[in-house]
Picture 1 (spheres, rainbow, N blue to C red):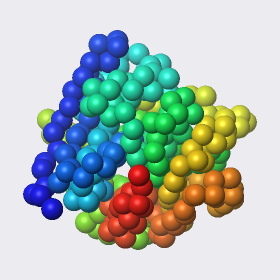
Picture 2 (cartoon, rainbow, N blue to C red):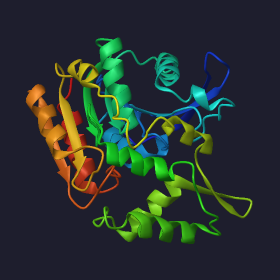
Picture 3 (cartoon, one colour):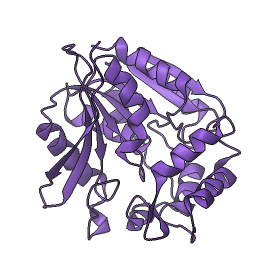
Length: 291
């Protein structure tokens, strides 16, 4: 196996001129295997996938982890209405084309899993296999309402130390298995210290994408998009304490997709952080068996 190479940042211009960012992890050795594309959650970034990307890199896989517009190192949009699925799908297609990725194994956390289903439905043959991290075709209403309460909202935080403490206090019950070291790592993936302030690593205007989520309006379901994935290998990951992916939907996905494998991450909620070695190893083992 060759020596591991550090990821490089790829920047391209979207069709409307916005600058988009991705992390490109070269394979540690030539393998001829298709690359892995990582798509983050709603308010997350490419950096979430660094531990799993490095593990896959050692297995001879190139990994491309994307920042959607308004997140990570991608530019913020002046119009929050362009933080929608259709525009993001165009961005993803442009980033894949720039990286010369025609087919790949996809790892999608939450929103990234919905994007993976949509790509499979609209661009047959692009998705060779999929890891869906705590997301399914039916999203639990209560979980969406909870997410709506915090996305884009941040009280004044004087230091990263306080940010870490805040995350542990607000999410510690659902993420009881997360170590102190993992909490610190996750906080540094969530916030950035700048000019003496702790800031979000995404555009707070992203919160408006959840304006349509209301107590009396059921969320849209995505079973038709999921059906497009059922012909390829799927690894479905669920946090045991998830309020987004229910056990019933988790099992229904397995019933409809005979090639689907299930993984339950104990002591974590929505969405598993992909920082613990057992989960990383299980995903790496699955990807190893993919085309």
